[in-house]
Image 1 (cartoon, helix red, strand yellow):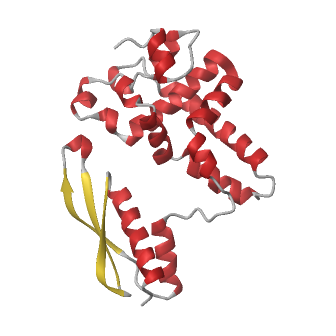
Image 2 (cartoon, rainbow, N blue to C red):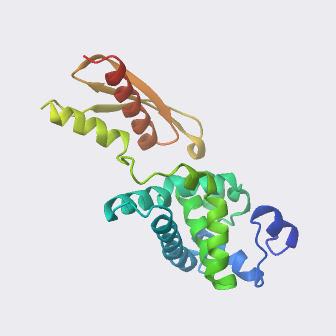
Image 3 (cartoon, one colour):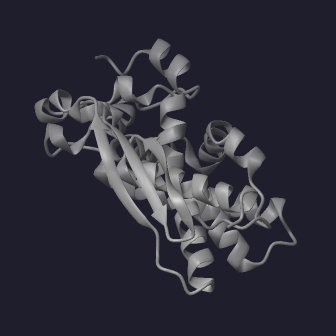
Length: 228
């Protein structure tokens, strides 16, 4: 794969690197050897946090520190970064070692998220903070449009647990009742049971964690619309 051609840069990122070797380094996973993107990932993580914090501070002058902190955490968490990376088709361009190629590493949330951070670090070194702000606000545009620091940002599992604890009831029980698909693209079917509801709910996700979150959300919806 060539990562220095102008066509790839224009179509894939919307940013032209003055130093194409930085782009190559950003796309090189540690499984290939010592010359990888881990240091750029470290830098990009810090830059992303700064840019998102600055955006939220300016966009929501009435939000308090706690609201801003929780909202930033939602925007820079692994799931969000992996979603942005998939929208860019980033997985197609990541350079992986043989083992990661065989296991389908380009599909993995952690690799996608880390590589996106490395790209941000590379853009910072290549074009400065202004270039990073432009790219981050473009890549995260849909997430930034939907954000509202005044909304509660607790995930579904936490909200379901707090709902039950407030009523002095047992915590939810999550069980993986089925796992399908190849190792690099598994689908988990998760069952959620609580004492208040006689029948469990089931949900699917690309990971056990994602399936549990969706099952918890379904259970919360049932409790809201069919209170026991």
